[in-house]
Length: 338
Image (cartoon, rainbow, N blue to C red):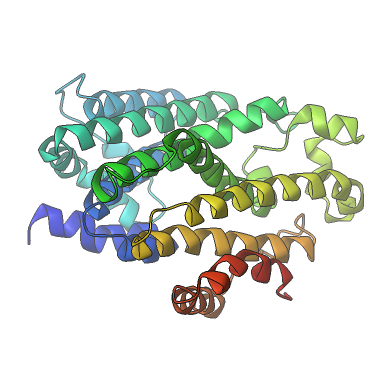
């Protein structure tokens, strides 16, 4: 079995969960490049998240891999201790097969390789910043981002840049001569990615807090008379709720811009339209669940169920045949009862 088939088939499916559904519907012309970029990003993320290894060693390993990705080094990579600390078998395989992934990157067309390297440069910079900010667990208050500007920067580095990459590589391969406003598409693609990451942040508050990190900005919390440690108690949600509603509205606004992005794709891009629509509609569904739950309760994790995902996929596929029905999907999802 070739490395291409192993990495971009079985391993990608094992590591990407719901994203694999999106990847499968992508047009074949961009599927390998997006899949490879995702695998490399998951590999760097695995390094950053393997807490059994010291922060300094993780930073060093991340730097070594980034240099290989960017073509700045040819030094062999050794992730022995990191592999032993992986929580999931698929993550261990990611580290074991990293040289195969890098060879695939080297074999990728130069213009695509430049785009993959650019997005991984930004993603790894965000992971390094995260490690330095949250990596060392110390006694005392839970550390947090300081400002809304830091939150915006974080969502760009880990997800907004992916929307930018996605736009550039799809335009290059799928509609190079279409009369599209690329500046607007790039801006909207960035907000698309930021919206998906905001949903993750607002959904994962209890888990992040117990891992010693808070992505809700200190300044905003302080203005509401709260600290990150207050969020450890589900009883404090009534105090958080006015602030939380603003972040939910921000996430929804980002996703609405992502929906506009999806609708601005050139005619004939049905598969690409679906690949964009599914994460947006699942994100909207998640926001609706968050609005009717207490997101500080760690025992009640908010999650869109598999049947709900399949409903969204089936409905959106049928809606491709009606322009009006397609455009109404975002609002329809907002009105769905949880």
